[in-house]
View (cartoon, rainbow, N blue to C red):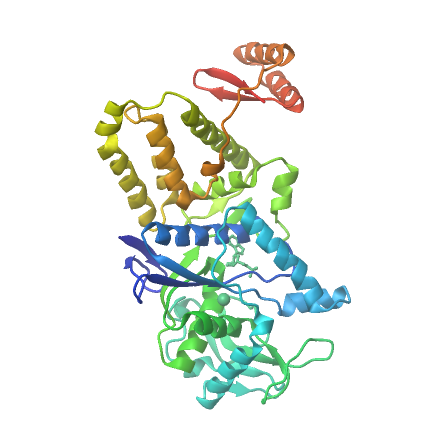
Length: 458
Ligand code: AMP
Ligand code: ZN
């Protein structure tokens, strides 16, 4: 039984797909005008854990993630660089897919582009006009009238902000403490891309693309709509208003939101300029799956402060995990007797893992079950390895691909340096000891301080 925290009800609820065995998920995708930063990637990794968990429970998943390839920021950048918008969006779209692959984020069932669904969007705007939920301003742009939609604010709790009746906004992102009529269709401006529409040429607002594409590919109500918490208001609130006003149907049964990745206590975001991307991790020789491991260590609904120290610690833990797997592949094959008595224990650990991840995607707890298995004396190495590789269908840490490690011969010079470091440490001369550690690392080796003393590795 899977429990998920539903932002709509403010509670954990049991999740089952509405139609048979297929969970239909819509997750808001990237605006492709720049590299995805580590914060964006945290959201995509949490959504990946969500779909992998559903699959581990025997469900099929049909997930759609849109590509926003026309939008204010894209147009601004294209104008600055004197390019066509697709010259901006295409390269970054490609990099987005490469980044996801490096983080073992599974490909989803569809990545529709906004520019290829203008017809679906204008159809939706026409319905909203016909039903009186939308109006054309004197600027010829079309706006959604929030005072007409009775349930406006049901996701985000509108009490927190003022409804400014009659006030309206034509930019896609706006201050979170106001609720205003928002733009559905922006009238054409010179130097901007535009498409024909019976109400006048223009381009879609950001919110309408998700309403149009989710309905087209998944049908309403969606089982799950996911995204980062910053999207709850106004984006998701506006999606609900558009979709429910147009169709009269519930838009999504579950709303699942992932918390932010912070840096120095602040949200990592392009506008604050405090971002790192996967390229920064690569430059610092951090494996990208170490970043995934770091993300798994904090529950998706908790804020996570990114530090270089924490990523190095994750790298060490992941390396240790890999080494255990590698050792399990080589040493002491299980005896028949062990195999017979352990079936129950194997099942117990399998259940412990699933119970953890099914409890609102508690990845930190699931990860701790993996470490418990490593320490379990009653399991054979083969059983441990099989369990861990099975868990990895959800964790996605590349455990299946771990090569059997050949213990590298450590040159005497390195061993001497390590011994000198150990002496310094015993003498509490930590600064000098650390300088030696760095020297050893420069020579291509590293020291892992374990409970039984330092271990050198290539
Ligand atoms: P964007 O490309 O800005 O539209 O954002 C893509 C996704 O990343 C959305 O689901 C956002 O909610 C999410 N996001 C943006 N910043 C962060 C952050 N610092 N931490 C986690 N998720 C984020
Ligand atoms: Zn969206």
